[in-house]
Amino acid sequence: MPILNDATMAEQRLPTGHYGFSATRLEELGAAEYTLVTIVNDVSPSVSEFVGEMELALQEIIKACKLSPRADNLLVRLVTFSGSMEEAHGFKLLDQCRLDDYRGLLHIGSATALFDAAENAVSAVAAYGKQLTDADFATNAIVFVITDGEDNASKLKPRHVREGLGRAVRSESLQSLVSVLIGVNVDAADIGAYLQDFKNEAGFTQYVEIGHADAKTLARLAAFVTQSISMQSQSLGSGSTLPSLGF
Image (tube, rainbow, N blue to C red; front, side, top):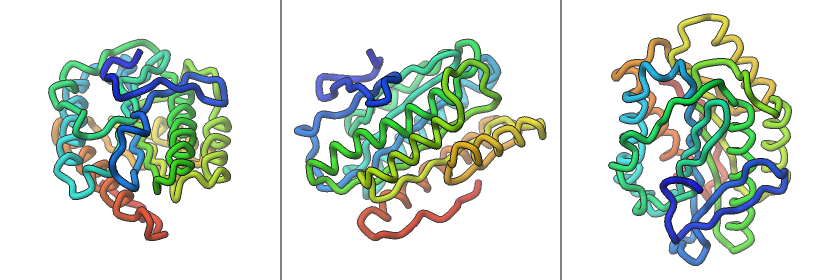
């Protein structure tokens, strides 16, 4: 059971048969259009040295989204992964997201199931997006996968992430889907090359990275994520494509 869900949300299965997702019940939604936001956060052992700063970045993202003119049109899901993935909360309305809930939320595990978590993220936005579209909501989505290292625990491969993205496009359930792979604390060139290869193999829209992770660089990460969410939400219904952004 996701740890930050409530009675307005329901757990759902995915047609792929992998770990499912949860989401706000359609009868709880009051707007006519929504941007589905998914943040997938690495909590493998190597993240432990900056996990506190990562939690602050998550709080800043949620806080900034709450202040956005599009706040009522955002549904946010948070997933963490180490040796396996865990949904901290499903697609949740911002007024249900309490900033204090993101303190002490990231728990360090073992290993890195990067591919499994990324596949679940794109499959979940496609599945929930179809439900919203079928119920006459206008919908688009943006997915951020944040990691600092190589996969060593997944059952799935990068091609499964690409297949998930392909299903989302073919279903036409989302007006657009932006997927961003973010390398954090990437000081070694071989890790950067590995993540760039994963971006290409999986078919992510964009790969961006920052070097040493500290309060300053992770604050920049929060600003990047917030700006990207805002632009994707504003593009809903316009037919425009979100341009590549940098830190």
